[in-house]
Length: 253
Image (tube, rainbow, N blue to C red):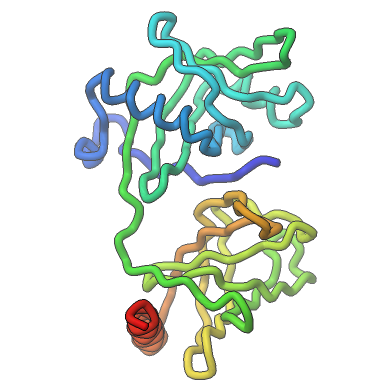
């Protein structure tokens, strides 16, 4: 299953380098971060400029040959588009850190143990701290829901469980039997019902899609709020504050 993650927009050529603070300039730093990504077995999203996506894991980091090897399935429909792309971006998450880097010279290598996608070692790697807005988990039973129309299937209305929420966005649970949503999708008219007193309508941008670990079945949709009214923002902040206080009290019991 491909895990879709939308790459961050980087500064166009010729503009001031606003992302210099997030860039790992030393090769030793980049290699250490890539090896950490390899050891964690974290999902890596490879994306082309044409919109093709492939979920993979980083298998090897070969500093001497300046090559990376990713898991690959020769039957993956997006593979040909990725191999033909002139620009290829990799995005992955390590806990609260988002990594993004460009890779080139992608080739599919066949071996006795299967296929690997080999690329050049990146010369630039960005390390972003994920948003610092306080994020609260919601109750597993009878918890908050988001009601929306599937952006690719407007006749399909979804009521998705809200996994967690912050003042800037939320994470939704997409069941395994529901058609996937594409990163970058704009979803208008989303109705959130967090509790009896916290209900509002907003517009969402789907930022990234990742697999859920453990027994839960489905995908985690990381969404950003847009067009949140002042009243909705105040209501949401009150919900977050109250939930945070309840969790602190429970931890003291």
